[in-house]
Length: 525
Ligand SMILES: O=P(O)(O)OC[C@H]1O[C@H](O[C@H]2O[C@H](CO)[C@@H](O)[C@H](O)[C@H]2O)[C@H](O)[C@@H](O)[C@@H]1O
Image (cartoon, rainbow, N blue to C red; front, side, top):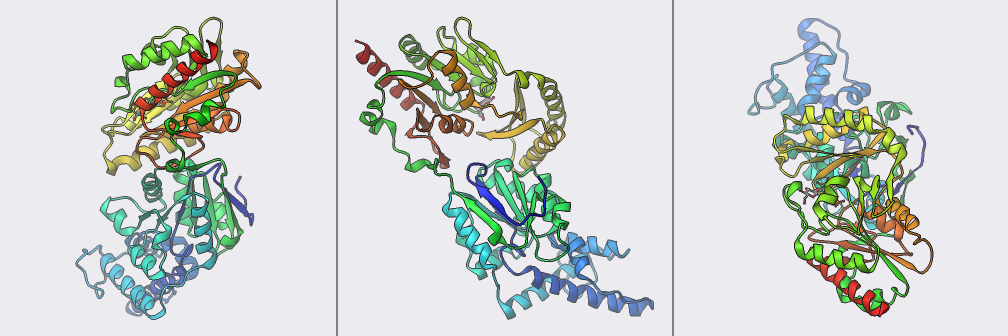
């Protein structure tokens, strides 16, 4: 909820990354910029007033906040001049500082900025540096996203480069032809470089244009840092919360997760987990990336014969369910096994041998929303080569594996815009895919619990085991924490996980299931 409150918590349960604006959030360079702009515009406005015998109206702090702050340099010049009903020729990037053109003004402002920086160095906000250290220690990924073409130089001068996993500055934005703030593209590029979906990332901004960019990008949390201006102005611009200082931002670590590489390999610790299998065991398996390797086209992810044979054998010994983001009919068609339970659409659609059938009722009420979202996504993404829309009964996936990098922000924005029009749907992410699904507290973990109950496998004496590779499988790992076993198929990925053990790849999943068969057979003999 939007409020100009003074405290906020960044929790690892809800967020994976924090994206920091630079000038005015981390470094005290916003006022150096403001002074350089004032020097530029006042000189121009005064000279022009003399020339036209008009009245000299100096550049104000409010001018800085409204028209210049946060925007790319040339954009700021155009925007401010327009606010005064003025314009100068565009000029070219070759223009020198004396030229009365947009480019010439840009060169002159930058010279003033560099001069001041040299004279006074870069001062940081100590609470911002402390917050950066805290969020990194808690396992958040961090990026700096700034419109400034001096971003790299400022960071280096401040000695803060090591605190960021990614940097998107004015130079990078120019190279990728990304529109600047208030467009969300530079923040979306930052999230992409960190490998997180915007919903799982926070944006920290002091400029109205930056706050608007964070809001338009659909970020999980937009924190306005009020360095100047009226209280509440940043909330009005779209921030969830406004703080006067970053010491008001608390960090909550997630004790349940650890980096993927620190998770022990299941096949090297078999004695350990076998010791926990004293009673009944039920196995829940994700499909893509777990039972089949990830392949370029979703329709080619067919189950291998040896995996099918292993699953068949396992399902004859203990309850086996496949819990997937796939559409239920497709999942059944790909697996082609009797005696196995299937949960499609991330657990919203369940079917098993015999009587077992479940469709999430509230989710069903949202099918028209999903239909509309599917139509809108197909229409807007038709013009982006490589983007694919896959409809499942209870979700819509947007695959971007084949989209060229430069057009990815368009895909992200399209998904964010459709989701914003349908707030009853929520957005999640996975391997090169975005998904819209019912905004309901239901996920793979809840589906596992539903199945355990339906199969009379609740309570002590049963060890539920979940194997998965992707972000949506983390819900199941968390649900089973302490009362079951979570195994993550790690591949080349490096991200935090709540799983107890890791398997290197799909072949190791097959070997693990083979060990389970041997164990259950031995135990029942
Ligand atoms: O829960 P899962 O069974 O892991 O399903 C998750 C999504 O898997 C599929 O997409 C992923 O696998 C494709 C085939 O390997 C790959 O091309 C794509 O990039 C991956 O995102 C499936 O198409 C989605 O519907 C599932 O939600």
